[in-house]
Image (cartoon, rainbow, N blue to C red):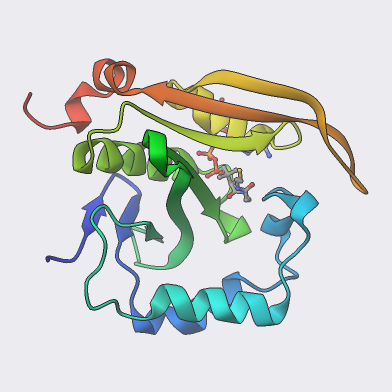
Amino acid sequence: MDDVVLDGDKVRLRDWRPSDLGPLRDLLDPARPWHETNGPYFGTPSTAAAESTARELTTIKAEPPDPRTSLAVCDLSDGRLIGRVSWYWESRETDWRRMGLVIYDERYWGGGFGTEALRMWTTYLFSRTDALRLDFATFSGNPGMIAVGRRLGFVEEGRFRSARRWSGGVHDAVVYGVLREEWDRRHRSDMGPA
Ligand SMILES: CC(C)(COP(=O)(O)OP(=O)(O)OC[C@H]1O[C@@H](n2cnc3c(N)ncnc32)[C@H](O)[C@@H]1OP(=O)(O)O)[C@@H](O)C(=O)NCCC(=O)NCCS
């Protein structure tokens, strides 16, 4: 199967490579600020867990899954690794996929990289599956992720009030989703010829 390489205006989504290991170790460092909004109630992963994630992602798979479960997010202008998109089964039995997005490198926050990465990832997943819907979960303390979703046309489908109480405070858990036909209408030009 060919490598996946998807270019937007400012980001490239591509398959992971063994040479990403060094940069990824640095980006996954427990001291990096992205841990503060990426499910902080689960606790910051240990250095050992970060190392295991970095190795897992950058090990070449003999038969990579289609669709990919994760791609590297790079700055298109210079190829620098800056983040990751992913998805997992919320419920495989009912064909319900949930996406993840992290721009690990805080120097890129607020520059439109997250929005473009999630736009391209959503289009990729709709085009490689017959999924009826895609969503992501976050919490009310992450206005950046909520803004990314709203900007792309995701709608708030669930709000679990005061569901995230931990040492950092009390927040709502929220889920934003989009239906295939909504995405197709709004991002028709991304989807290729009908
Ligand atoms: C959340 C995240 C993915 C957003 O990506 P980004 O590249 O920083 O976002 P963009 O530059 O594309 O911004 C999109 C919108 O969000 C807004 N935004 C970004 N960060 C924000 C923040 N901290 N507070 C409020 N709004 C924010 C931008 O102003 C923009 O809004 P606009 O369209 O009205 O101008 C990124 O900051 C990140 O990875 N953070 C750390 C990890 C994380 O929280 N991941 C998500 C877990 S659910």
